[in-house]
Length: 325
Ligand SMILES: Nc1ncnc2c1ncn2[C@@H]1O[C@H](COP(=O)(O)OP(=O)(O)OP(=O)(O)O)[C@@H](O)[C@H]1O
View 1 (cartoon, protein in one colour):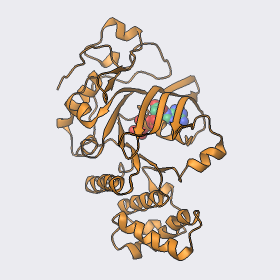
View 2 (cartoon, rainbow, N blue to C red):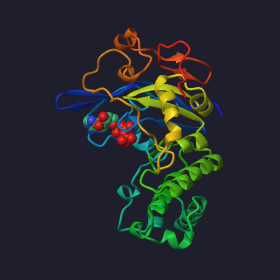
View 3 (spheres, protein in one colour):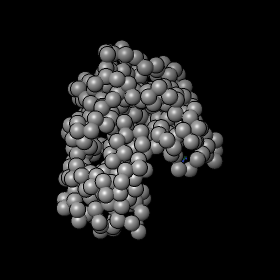
View 4 (tube, rainbow, N blue to C red):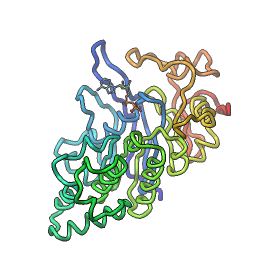
């Protein structure tokens, strides 16, 4: 369970904006091993989707500058040509998004759309359709045969997300990137879908990069977690490292916020203070202005990533870390 699949090295993404550049991701580094569920958590706007979309160069506005390495199976996707990336998208790395309706064609049945992906591999049509039904059963679609003949608008949000997962897994990718796949769903369905992703990882061996606001479910289904703050990955580690022994003040404050979870069970509550403007990138830790432990140095120097153990890394000057819970 420890073979490297994706390694991100010093990834920085700047968006060109009216008043200059917005540093949405700065020097992010992490790796995802085969068959691993790797979750990225952090407040809204901290750069999670930017990382996810940079991997397959799928940022919609095309105003980004991507620097750093995105090594996938030994090849740097940031240096790949558009044609090379085409071969990776879908086939080797699948991606699902928050709103499946954006990705589904309203005029074809959902089964036909899943079948299309299978037919790319030149499988006979009848066999392909049987595979569609098999996939619908694997994603626990109720009444699989009938639902495969349904159009997107005839399905619930949860069912549509099951279709998307089936569509991606049908092509047997090595990595599935799931960018807030359950944010639009109610909490019961959200838990079902995230648990399904874990079951499918166990069955198919597909590694998953998961972006979600639901901390409770991250603890249940992920192997590794990266905590992001204002474009920087401040801590990475196993679920145990992050949830039981957070070292970065930001992660620690997030964990402290957990018992105060509101109606939307498991969702992140925010911490006092505000995120710095990312258009005026100055040296120093980006969390310093909200950090109860900040010293002068924190405002002037960028902390490097420090290795705490084989699995645990933190970007903070505090030698011993803090645990404010
Ligand atoms: N095309 C763009 N041009 C300019 N700024 C952008 C663009 N896309 C995103 N941003 C900004 O970059 C920052 C990171 O956004 P991103 O969507 O990656 O965050 P996120 O953590 O995924 O947020 P959420 O959880 O709300 O989806 C935000 O400040 C956002 O406003």
